[in-house]
Length: 312
View 1 (cartoon, one colour):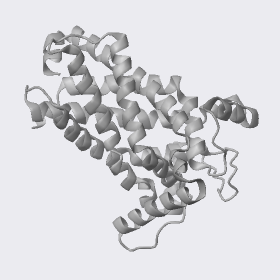
View 2: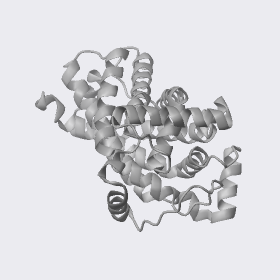
View 3: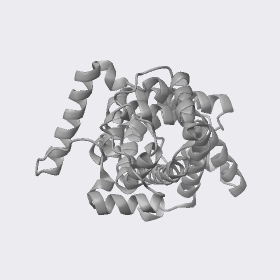
């Protein structure tokens, strides 16, 4: 198994995915800022994405749109490296040269997602807090934080809340492994359909469009849990007192979902969806486009281009 998982091919996929995601997120980062504000700040009215961005710039300055960029990029780079590496490593080991199917892509995507969540959740907890630090919230119950950087945030969270707080939101994150799993299942399926059994490189338009479609479907299906995940990572919620960690997580998620619906109706679960779709669909589309081109170019230089397409 180790010979199939630990290969240069898996490493190329991982590096290409990480580079593509970092570039794409940097381009569309302000859209993610708008999405996160709407998810976490219940008292902020849901407006159009341009209106939210204009409001943030007016109140906090232009730099607020890129607040927390560095920790987000670090987390995203690590997260996508782990996910792409696991996905393609496990895929190579399982299929052993056979053609993949939608069901195998989904199962492999879930497995890669679980590994990714367990390894990178602490990074996402820290980057969520750094990104929201210094924001002007409408909700007066939100306590201000004072972190000087990534390491300081880690230390303050461990001292003040315990090591376990670094894995806040892990349970919904484990449920949310369906998001990238569905995304990759649709992406790989559409890619096979476009190629029609002929090994070839996708065009710029093809890679961009199927990346956008795959992410749009995955985001709409899993968005309510993404909202709860953001609230849990932010760390300012009333936690259940159950002794069982699993029961406590389930009860907390249930309470957050019920309170959200009670205050804002069913649509409250989808608050910020417009900003999320705009950001995540464009980011994923650009990421897959860059990933395909970087991987293709690297394999071509390595003289593995034809083998690379046959395996996929």
